[in-house]
Image 1: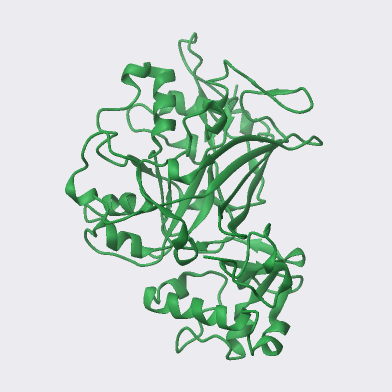
Image 2: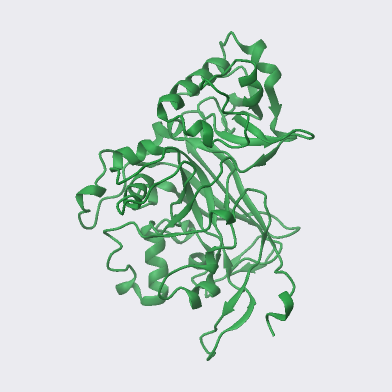
Length: 420
């Protein structure tokens, strides 16, 4: 598919994340105005609340864009999603007859503040990247026992905290927790010393379910995707995770990008999941390609320093697709809600420079990374800003997500003498 040209000139460059091919969904505000729904086009945002009030878009009989989240629109389902996208293309296409009517509702992105695009109902994080799972398992159990016995048969996951999900740009404070060094008999309470990022994608559930759904139906339930950083306190996790897995180590924050790139925009970039090392049970078999070719990077900028790319990887490295994860999530009869967020799990490639976390990149701290200013990192330090970026590359255009960034703030002072 070639670039779809728009009368919004900034949407026609090869380097913008937001050409007419994309039209991602977000929530924004401007000075003195309440947050409202918008769609990114080039370096502008189309104010959908205003456009709906003017009758330019009308996805439903009653307004759906007069609230600061996309849940009400998503609840209309795929039958409304497609025609709405077609209407946006009609309004913004280079040859559109509606430019004069639409132009007053464009807001410069540089003048806008971006917010969480949805009300997040529930949050589930998976462990579905094979290279990541193998690397982490090798560090703690050796390569011969790296993958748990069930890993090649089931998308492993855990239920996280929807309340801890924040939008890009929100600061992240270093957490306190119980730490137990290997040479200590008992734990102590202190700020995390091994704070880390995890480069992931997040899938947004746009249609509710009751009972089990198949992989194809699960794919149709997904409204779109965001970049996702599942911040991780490795030392807290090492002490608490047995036998029930992550708890406080994963509850500090999960940062997502502010723009939801719809499944329709990613359709041209579908690729199959990798060849299976052993057959999946029939309910998890895919009827077609369910992954996407999306280039991903993670960069670190020390406070006052120069940004450096830590890793380059691709979403196609996943062993299980979001549709398989969502399908498996429903097998117990678990209802899925509009606004549910599914984290893919850390996306690591086979090469060292494509590992999706500092735990892997520094191999548990044994191989610190060098930064441009000569400093090194095994894990994140206070003042560091970690930024995820991603895009699918088309012919002369790209479909991107914007930035997913967070700055590490120092831990709060000792809360009521808790560390004594």
